[in-house]
Image 1 (spheres, rainbow, N blue to C red):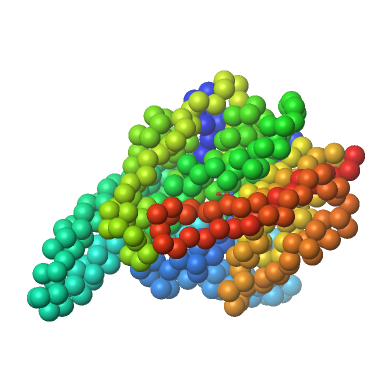
Image 2 (cartoon, rainbow, N blue to C red):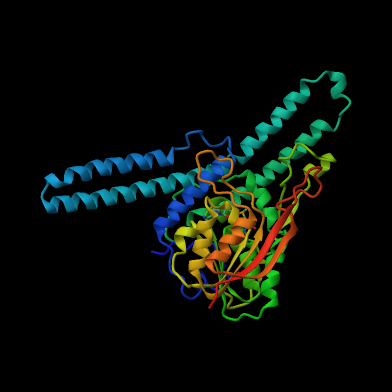
Length: 424
Ligand SMILES: C[S@@+](CC[C@H](N)C(=O)[O-])C[C@H]1O[C@@H](n2cnc3c(N)ncnc32)[C@H](O)[C@@H]1O
């Protein structure tokens, strides 16, 4: 059973052929990866639509494991055949539990989409209540205030419609799974991330690829987000596979890659959540349009696909990829040396790794999580000790990430860009 995510370009074939040497990622690894991805998202972005306990995924896994252990401890007393049968039953039970957790995880993401509108309306209602608590003479100074909140409400409803459309596809998104009827949708992050489809930071990364004339080269993009970089690389004629573990991202990239074709045919209001740092009220309710390219305009015969799951679990086959392109990704690692190790192993001899991004370590402030925060200097030392040769290095490439151009507050990153080669 294939676990390749059906987030793939459907114009030429329902599932584009995989790059040479690529195996089906193990379904189990995909499921574990997806749940973990979501748990991290939950910690970063608590969303009122989800209950605090949220089904309590991991503790239940632990409980299932200890029940199985107990059974295993009893086995030596029983005849061998019975022991084998009990072990098999234990495995079936574990798999059933995995399935259940996977469904639970899926449902939680769907609910996050579904409650977007409800939660945003609550937020706006609170603002309205607070405004109305002001003395009448102060309220009368701001006749546009309440009409502006009504405009925000319309934007929320529009965003919710898009999110609903995104989720309508999700039941059939994975080739190997049917998730029943639990599809409604909504997420705060999505609006921002969809905006990212139109952003051009990836240009600094594909610049290196454009400058080279590789043919029949297979390229992997781990942590592909909404798939824009992977798509751009496929547009250049390379076989390209994006990999992503977040269902938020996978649902949305599925929508954009497979359902949107006309340029600027969809609209979102990504800034309505920002009540601070607006220079003008109109800035908060301005729309963005997407896609800014036609995702179906890949040349015929192009080889582009997306896989779902944890990059480190899915990609274990040595000497497989000609190139790995990471964009704003390596700082998502618990231990960036593990990422370097995986990249080293799965690159073919002579293959290159292109990286651009900052080092904003994803787990830095999550107390219970392993987080090894290395400076670029340390990372470079590790890369050299593995045996990579540095071909290009720029230590200060200016970039934004989902920035609100009109905001009074903006973040800029001074990214590191490097191209390193695994020797022949
Ligand atoms: C900062 S975002 C960058 C996304 C995209 N590369 C871009 O530049 O817009 C990092 C992405 O990596 C994904 N990610 C993190 N750890 C991952 C893992 N172990 N396997 C696959 N994807 C992962 C996250 O879900 C997220 O979408």
